[in-house]
Image 1 (cartoon, one colour):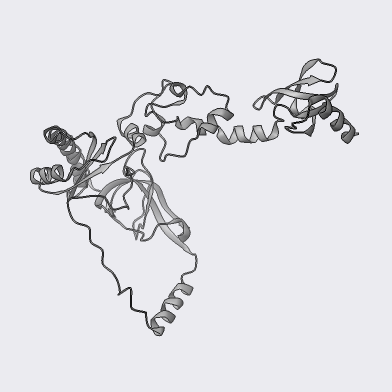
Image 2 (cartoon, helix red, strand yellow; image 1 turned 120 degrees about the horizontal axis):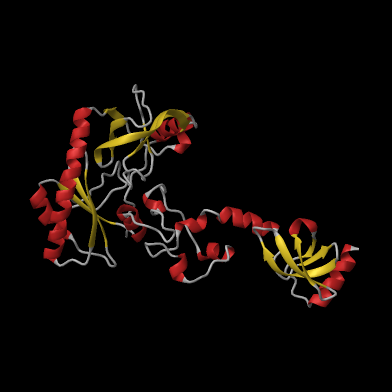
Length: 333
């Protein structure tokens, strides 16, 4: 199972065993007093507002909410924050704001402090260490003969954890590799298998349009893309023409999807019966973006009309065109 490269609030596989603590015996019923107390607390937790700041850890990563405490943050300010992965260095993208508690993920972690020069120097030093760790890990992968492609290496700010991102076509047993890496780096090691889209996001590159990949420049999240979107836009269904560098359907297919849906809904499709200024006819071709309809009239002529100048008598009727036109015209009259 692959994971999101920018997810900082989900547990990951590591060389350490994961244990869970059960708050109370599942077979023990809570007392009536505790139940009433819990109900009172739940009733008191009404939707409210909370002050937050938005922080990013990657240029094209997600923005996460943190509690600023007494700190006043400005956009671009480097800060040290507490995450599920440990202490992290990030940049403020949303200054102090108030949002509904319904829009936050509990628990809301805190901004520890504004990053100073020594913090920034340590962050930059970690980047150099990551480059060295990447090369070492790649060599170890070759030594262990594992069928996996190393994508990136990342230290947490306090160097308490070293994460390696990789892609693979199959599930990889990397337990021995983790032990080997832990003996070299003397810190907690995590390996995360990421999807092919996340790989493209990290690696970067140029799309078929000749521009840098959207996912590596401005897209902060991946949205669902379907072949239906390509069909609605009258694109060739040749996979080489509608697939991105990652091999999946291009993300940009969704950019105009809502516009196409709106225009398609407003445009009579082929086989619809319409009434024009020159009589009743059947739509044989439609162009949703321009709104133009090619209509075959009852007298046999084919002419082009704009959808705003015709009246739809029926849509997609399966009756014969002659019977369709006659009945529709009678109904209209």
